[in-house]
Image (tube, rainbow, N blue to C red; front, side, top):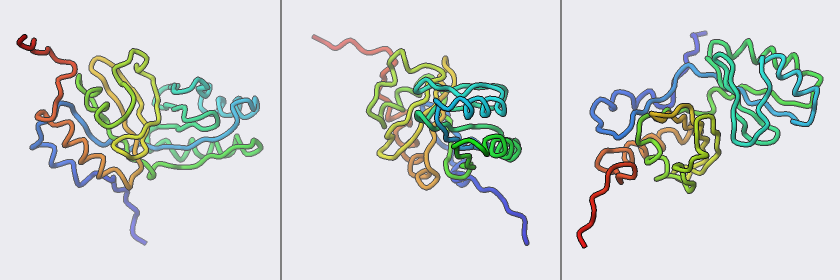
Length: 206
């Protein structure tokens, strides 16, 4: 049997970036594992066992995340989290969580190939982001650590605000929509498509 290889959804789009003039930098993150974890936040045994494996408590505040080392846990809902970590560490953590939570009402599932992660970075990331969604990404509460589900370019997505100054945002989309979202970003993040939201504005003649 031939060895299995892992292909990224956007691996065929990377070369074209050399000829693009974009207002931001963007690339698909590779070698990333994703584990979907479900359980009740009010279940003390579940929360304790999950924390024992992860080395940190699961975030319970809506739209937040927690991190330790190379592991980041994104809050998705009152009973769901997405654990993001290096792909090489996925299997070990998946096995440890499954074993530790065996007696708890919970679900642990590998979702590494279900989503693509497009990393957007630069001073004009927020400008590009608000072109495709209905919430105001310029608000002060949208800061590093914020996790938000959203309808982006008319498809379900998840945003994780990683860093600020310059802004770094990871956009999670289901793999089947990755190529469409990438093409959308190429068009709307192009320098010629800028709206100058964060730039000096010319004073109109009156």
